Image 1: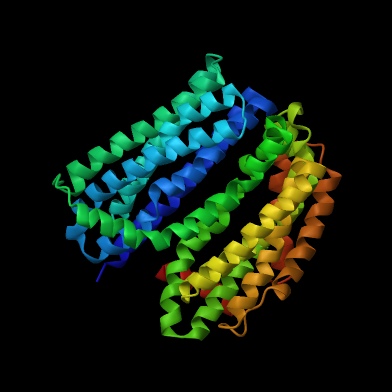
Image 2 (image 1 turned 30 degrees about the vertical axis):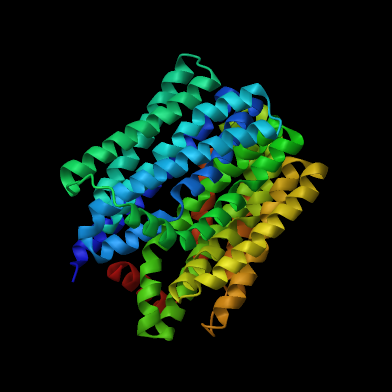
Length: 476
């Protein structure tokens, strides 16, 4: 049995590693958006989003399979790594070929084609880093995963600061982003062979074939996720151009996506608990799931209200006046924030009780809806249409997931958990709206104090919930 302190150590490594990567990603996005301007930043965002889809094909669903099988039998680690190294290199080369061919056939400019060619090298580096991370996770070496992520993210930040200081070009930025990933790959490979496993470079074609076949089912969700995540940017680029992509991604990728840090961090702690409690008894799972939803609603509602009210100040302060069109995008997405927060534990709850197939069909439905709405709304409203599409899909996915999960957990509740947070957020909103032209940091800090003071006055948490919160984190 694994000691509890080792579990907590691994959990902390995952948590802080993920937080660091996402936070540094936000900082990088802000720096580049201000430096490049909306149109060039739109080109940069498109190139990355387009390549991300092909990275899924390069990974071919192997990461989850490696974690599952190597965790069961640690002696398989060298064979799985060598086999994934070979197969992923082949798939990466194929993906790069199709990426370049497709971006050419879609009629993009020579400039975009050049950027795509340069950035396509990152497909190989990222997929191989994923293989290394999967082996390390399976062997419960989360501290090493943290180190690789921190080094890669830090290298990118240093490169970006240097390029901006030296007034470099977008092509140089893309090149050094690829170089930062190469640095992470080298560090990861050194850690793996020096500190974790002893590699034996034996090529077993039958094992490689079996690896690919077994990984195929894991590929489906990856493709759905990748397409869903990047459809808006790709369609916006093709229909309206890179300038509109820049305005959209400043708010959607630079700020809105960064807020995923909060529900993702909490889910990192609660997902293993959900999985364990499902076997122990549905009542415990129900209490934990309800309480997690309640916490995330309490955190999400004030962020929704505050972001909506302060969107002009946020955009002007962070990105500058060239991103005026991003204000409406951020306000629309802000409405969806609290729904996004409440939806996250529902998805993990479905996975914990073995409803992965239902979750997959749910994702397929919203992928189709996302594509249809984007095709309708982007020609009419450009980046605002893409934002409306995202908000609608997030809003509708909450009751859809809730309906499926409630069939297993009868006393699951969402609506009643919104009442007191909304009251507190309205009080907070009135105050920050009245002082919206003052210092942004001071307004946010003051608003947070007011909100949580009202939450306390309204006695939002009862005694048993406070005890449950303590028990959840102590037993994680």
